[in-house]
Amino acid sequence: GAVVSQHPSRVICKSGTSVKIECRSLDFQATTMFWYRQFPKQSLMLMATSNEGSKATYEQGVEKDKFLINHASLTLSTLTVTSAHPEDSSFYICSASPGLAGGSSYEQYFGPGTRLTVT
Amino acid sequence: AQKVTQAQTEISVVEKEDVTLDCVYETRDTTYYLFWYKQPPSGELVFLIRRNSFDEQNEISGRYSWNFQKSTSSFNFTITASQVVDSAVYFCALTPSGYSTLTFGKGTMLLVSP
Image (cartoon, rainbow over all chains, first blue to last red; front, side, top):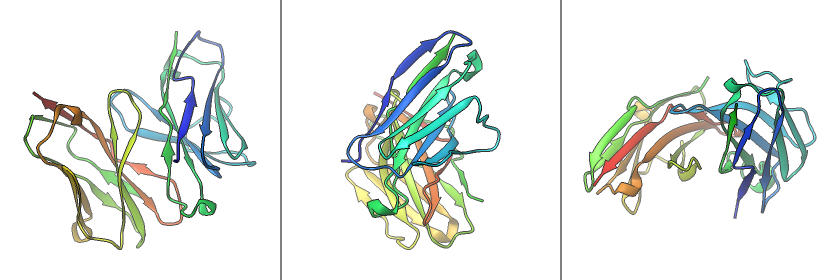
């Protein structure tokens, strides 16, 4: 149980275009989803936290207009990188938490990640 | 504020050696959870263990063992008889009870050579 998927696993896009990454909880309802960014040989940096039906809470320094997060249902959150530039190239990882309804608020289940390359 | 320090950036060992990965944390919360994750070259984070701050018992799972010491705010991870497949980046993480936000350490890259 507790499987989280991400799509696509890899994406290459041209500078100036937008790309959408999907994060799905396959066998549980995720009241909270998290988006992380990881640069090569670095740790995971939390970008934003989203609760179903609410606006996402962005970490300091993360541009909310550039990284659009939508958490429209209990099983799906999307991250859209708008007007992507080469510096946005990174590994993006989502995680999902069932929250208190799932028995424990601290569990996070991670997706396999999406490698974005902007040319 | 939470902080997790993994002072070892990279460790290289030869197969069958034992290796310990250090993790030191800082938190003002009296209740919290500590985690270890493995990230192989594929990138996917693999959950290894969760430890509640009230439970200081050491845990062993196969070749893996964890030593949690509140007195020194450490949660060290030992791999016994390491194998090439253990090569990965290992992250220690912390979350206060009642929240899900994880604070990650910078990770330790473990290279196990044959």
